[in-house]
Image (cartoon, rainbow, N blue to C red; front, side, top):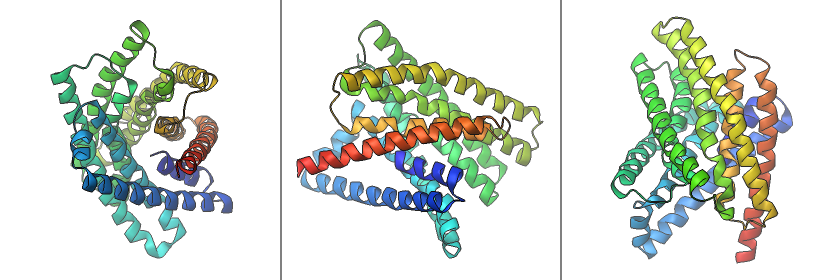
Length: 324
């Protein structure tokens, strides 16, 4: 997820420079390499132990399928944006890959969202975590990336209704889950040190919904003939959500720094420091279409993302080397 997001943001912010173009292309290659490697490793584990599949789709651990969905959506979007600028002859193939990734990622995301939510209602587990939100963020990513597809392919207005449904679904369910998780950690117990980076996950809805609101509002005016105040609503929503993201980000920074001070052990949880931060940069960039000063905010957050991605990638490589 984080690699695809960083690739897209690098292309959007620095794609016109040789270094930025090279960096975004290499990140796409890395992203696809990781996708193929992780898929093959998961398939191999299932072949060795069929119980792995059953465990992955039951219980609170099934929220991880949200990461699969968002990873597919992110690398598909990055491919659609970066490859045509890299090789014009490959533009049609890149667009086809983008469409395929959007369809597959959205399908997995919707199954994850409704399946996980139904499971929570049935089981009512007593220890809510921000990581549960991973299951319900994907439809918001689908809404944002789908807006790009709608604009590029000239899809019918009915498709915009689908994007709106994805937006509302993720916003409502995410709001409920994150509110319950915040309350639990404020009243019952703190987020464990080892899970401190998961405090960033709610920011994924903040950033993605900001970008989606601006994009969908613009499409509604352009394609559906909605009144121009729809743009105002989209901008107002994005500004409000990104404003809410300030205290939530400060809270996440506090927990993360405290985690490092307390020698938080490395785990894949650290990658929570990438994609949500990237969504804040993306949301700020979309908002800059109407409030130009927000582009500076987007660039600053993108630079933070480069730092956290480098940290996580380095720690992951060290962990793999240590495990060999």
